[in-house]
Image (cartoon, rainbow, N blue to C red; front, side, top):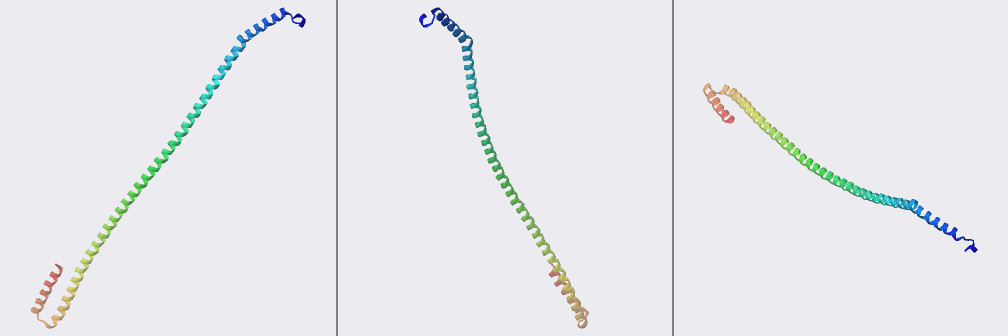
Amino acid sequence: MEQLGIEPKLLLAQIINFTIIMVVLTKLLYKPILSMLEKRKKEIEAALALTEKMRLEEEKMKERKERLLSDARKEGHVVLDEMRKVAKEEEKEIIARARKEAEAIIEKGKQDVARLKEELMIDVRREAVGLAGAMVQKLLSRSLTNTDKHAIIAKNLKDLESVKG
């Protein structure tokens, strides 16, 4: 080996130096770097898992939000329909009450008209009897005696009372 320019002692020293450096580097540098890289890899995997978990949680939250909004819309429609139904029922009740009041007013008006008509008829009868009595009296005063006049007036008064009653 000497002919090649390699000295065995020097080669042996180089191999020992290389082995020592390899052992030292492995213990001091390589293993800590590998463990640090492994630790970093686990942290990245944990972060990715957490990210995926958060993404799934976000999707669940979106679905829940949509479901809640949908339920709220449905409930709003139900409440709105119920309010419309109640409003229509109240409208029908108000219309029915107004009709009853109108019918009562009309009936009272009819009764008032009938009462006034009756009163007018009584007044007209009184006037007619009074006029008839006055006419008869004038006619009779010209041609009848007092006794005949009294008999006719009494008869007319009886007729008048029967008309009133």
